[in-house]
Length: 204
Image (cartoon, rainbow, N blue to C red; front, side, top):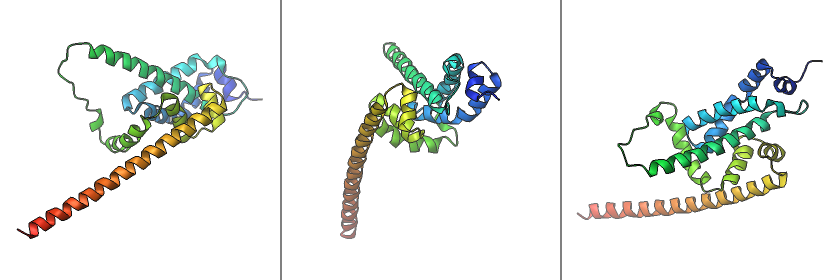
């Protein structure tokens, strides 16, 4: 009987691990980008996730289903650690004398601009969530894991996943309602100002 992909990876089969990489590279990058909101950081998360997965391969059970929750769980931890390191770096830079800013041309790359703009509004709302809520929301809503798989990825109870996801959805729904109300108010004001300008121009 052929060994399962899990067993082969656990035993250090490089070809089996390559199969896992081909299957999971895109989902990991997408998950990392949603967590970080940054293309470069997502690429770092992608690389470090599979380095860590190879290092931890001995922890894989020979029997089981998809390795997707396990890999996305590693990616979540890697992104979390990179955020902490970035905060420490930013704090260190803030204590240094200000220099001339270096422009970041990454966002000027054609094909990435639209995606970055679309993500900006989502990231603003997403950023209002607590980190634990962000991770659960990203795994369940964006990466499509069920509650049990997300619990496996994060190493928490299924009930914890449900409660965090529920809180995240309620917060986002409230924020969306507030944004919609504010947008409607701005639209009404804009229409009013437009009418006033037209009347004034006609009376000249």
